[in-house]
Length: 457
Image (tube, rainbow, N blue to C red; front, side, top):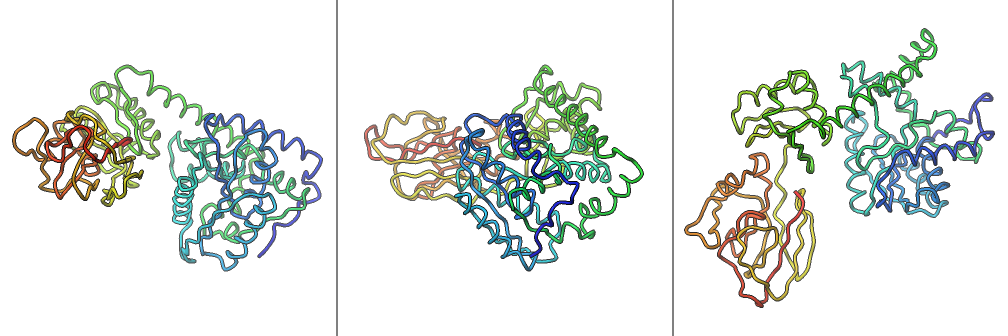
């Protein structure tokens, strides 16, 4: 395992070490993390950038007041990855911090993009598992420059040229205003070295090529290049923020976001100039993490202008657009979750984007047909997705209605129906959550029954 070399003689080391910690505190305050945050997952690769992030967060804990959990992903790509994991665990132990590890065993042929996607998916899973409010990543100023260049080479639009955000939802990047050299120097002043990943200098990877070959060539021809690129990124970020704000102030759009889904009213949007309407759609898509290019935004607008409800457009990356009940929706194509058996007298679980809680006790009045809470008697209660042929006998109604028609009448978009929670008891659908309660499995007031509540979605 190759340690990071000590800084060159002209690299700032300890002279401004205290200033760097002070700047980090200021950078943290600028993130404006929600006041309810209590725990932070710190992604530590073992390299100098992430080790600097870890030590700065630990040194400034009186500033942010967060409990820190160190998270390390062993991709299983480099032969020394086990040694790197040990380095990270040892660093966390010296600071008295807990560590969570993942061994993904991706293999040496894994692409940079695939490894990043696997890493971020595991980090988000670890965040939820350990009750963390956010994830801290160690991207610095040099990473931002590289990102802007790579997006320009890929033909990205203005929003992409903004580069990485300091904070996006639960991801925070407090080091974006710091140079790598000063981070390495700050670590060296404390006698700390990190792992130098050989992949960072292997030009087979796009980012490594940009870092090792392209940027040095451009800097030699264009002094001050990094400053100009960062200025470009800041200007693009201001434009991105402006369009994001416009979503809330333009009359009639009626923006409705939820988990991996967002929708806007179609009628005002389709009357706007195409460039304006497309840019607003792109801004809406960014709210839920969908990168929507101008061509696909135009295609979605064309579908909306034709006015055929239920029409869908593939948007790439697992995303889809849909016109439904007068609204343009953008959503991630869902896979219906596996059935959830409600076992035991008390429980709580996630079912897709929904939260399901249940408890047993004396039933209250169960006369409501709709609602998100209900009391039920019977055996084998299971929350599951609608299945072909499902029918429900509405409380106070006559006959049995197809569940798909119940969802249509409730104006649930077609894209959401496949993952809508229904309750099966004794082999029969007795509840379409939030929409229709069956006349079956209804307890009398005071009977021993199962109380179920569904929220989220």
